[in-house]
Length: 238
Ligand SMILES: NC(=O)C1=CN([C@@H]2O[C@H](COP(=O)(O)OP(=O)(O)OC[C@H]3O[C@@H](n4cnc5c(N)ncnc54)[C@H](O)[C@@H]3O)[C@@H](O)[C@H]2O)C=CC1
Ligand SMILES: O=CC(=O)O
Image (cartoon, rainbow, N blue to C red; front, side):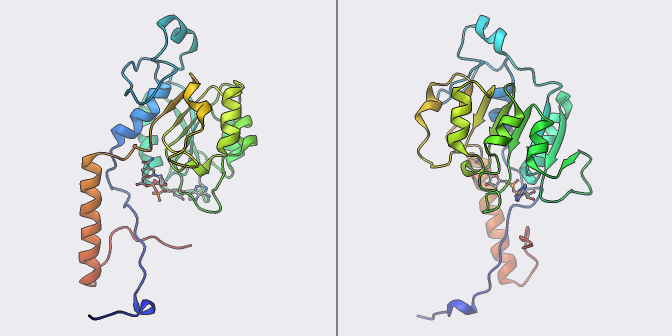
């Protein structure tokens, strides 16, 4: 059997191209379920502050999406599409990324603390690296304030989960929508009994359409690679 020396293998990293269609309906359902009090049909796997309570309770505790200041942590492929869909609801979008993106019209905050101070909602969708681990620390969540809502569809370890749970338990955050957890599949028990939290089991991308699209992308990249053609969505290492 022919063998290839490890050092002879070229390493090419690819990621999803900007036009890669994730099932954003699903992603945004995750967000809107938390933010839209009119949503009355969450899957059974989730419990919702807004939808699992009597209408009278929900009325006192509803959050209106329109007009909210939404800060996006990581304005990549997913973040940009979330912004595009939130704008028509009248949300004021701003973002944090390592560098300002010249083609993006939204205000950029150089650090996550300032983003938190200036927003009502934080949506976390940056990649997890050593640099971004616990990018959402206690002081960031405290800066967001008691009326603040945090949504995480990126990776659990982007948020200091212990601190998040404590703040939610003590009512020092208004709510959270979490698709990802720091030690999956373990989810902190406290979260299950909180009424101001929406949980989903890391399923924001789990649709047949998404998996078909991923398969197509991987196949196209392999074809391109073995025919010495340009690959789609090559990761530029900085
Ligand atoms: N919950 C789920 O099912 C899914 C979760 N994901 C997660 O969402 C992440 C984002 O996905 P895409 O938007 O497709 O990736 P992307 O690569 O297009 O965007 C990631 C963004 O994060 C930014 N970023 C990296 N380090 C940062 C830092 N230290 N501070 C601020 N921003 C930083 C990058 O500049 C980039 O704009 C993925 O890395 C993955 O972990 C992705 C798909 C499904
Ligand atoms: O979490 C899922 C992913 O595709 O990344």
